[in-house]
Amino acid sequence: MGGNPVIREQGFALITVLLFSMVFFALGVAALTMSYFGFHTQNSENNYQRAGWAAEYAINQAVSALPTCSSTETSCPVLSLSGLSCRYAGIPDSGNAYCLIRGVGQFRNASIVKMVVMPIAPTGNWSAMVARSGTLNLSGSSSIANCDTTCPAGGPAVLYQAALNGSYTPVDSTPANCPNNPTGVYGHPAVQQKSTLPNDLASTFFGGATDWAALLSALGSKYGADASGLGAGSIPAACQVSWVSPCGGKKQPACKTIPPSGCTGGRVYVNAPNQTVTLSTALSNLTLVSNGTVALNTEVSGVNIFAENISVSTDGEILQGGAFFSRSATSIALGSNQVLGTSSSPVLMIQGGNLSMSGSGGPDLFGMTYTRGSSVSISGNGNVKVHGTMIHDNANGTFDTSSGNLALTFDYTVLANLSVNLSGLTRSPSCGGTTKDYLLTKQTAF
Image (cartoon, rainbow, N blue to C red; front, side, top):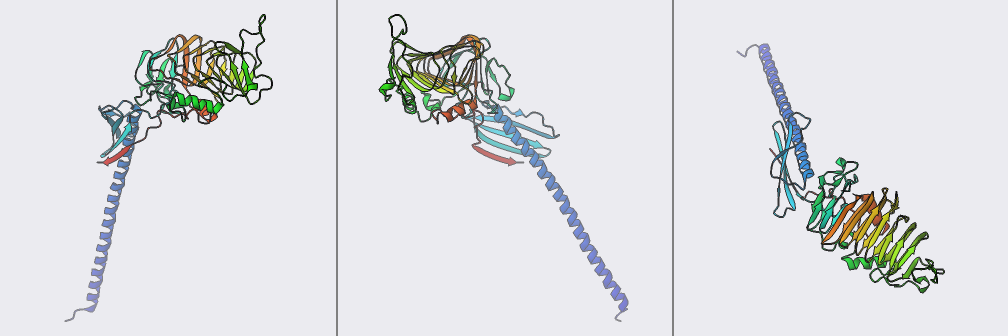
């Protein structure tokens, strides 16, 4: 009645084998299912990662197009991976100061949307030429360019505030695309209006100077000179000279020696109202202050000049930097291959009045010029090359090269060296197109 015990044992063994088989089968199915979903999860993750890269590329394309912020959706350039694409569009705010950028990246069935808010304009105020407003006339092969590869994204070649009229050809070009010898205005953008520039640009480009008067005070403090009144100030009597002109002629006293015998301290004052003080012997490491016109026609090194007017002739070269301030006007006539300053030791030239420059044979000026007069005029047969920046701070001024050629280029290194050499009297430059930062970011996956 109990059955055959052998058969019962065989039955239990068969049932056990079947149960283990079912367990192993279930585990196998589960492993296959997990592998299947893992594969698809990883594949989906890869798709979304590629789509995210495309969305980031779309944002970068939109940023490179600024200051254009267009609501028209634009496709990115063709991407090398099949199935990968992106597009972008932007919406400016009411003040045209910020752009809401929407970038979409797609790969197969994955789609990523990224949105950022960015300033439309480069945040820096540095460029090859800065004009509070006025007229810009370029002639012949003249150029104003921001092609310095130190700032890869570039910046405007001409930055202005209220109005910029006249004759010039603007070309929107980053440094990588600038030609070797540009003609016209090259930058990214070529010209840019900046409504936030103050009415007195001294505060923008000079450290600690709130306005023109403060700049003159800072100059005086740095060099121990009376930049505002062009008086002797604290210069000792042994270093003061009363000039008589013409000198050395019949029954006229000889020209005074500069610096006079017995003068120490590196500062000289020349009292010469309505006269011209001609520096015809080589000078170095000297600060000269005069209420007359100082004419330079010899080589100087490390010399600073503060005068009513300054005249630099074709024979005079300025080496190892220097600061040159004229309360009224400055005229510069440069000869073949002549240099004023160097890349490592640039010059600072400040004019309360007009600036006129002429040249022949490709002379070079390294540094910054800051002019408050009504006109900046470039003339001559040769290409006058200015490396650094020229700032024209006059609401009704004219910047004119109609009777000459100018090659004005923004040079970050020159301006940075100038700031260091002058201990921050001039501000350190910034790259106009590389200081843009994301203000707000959002990412959505579909």
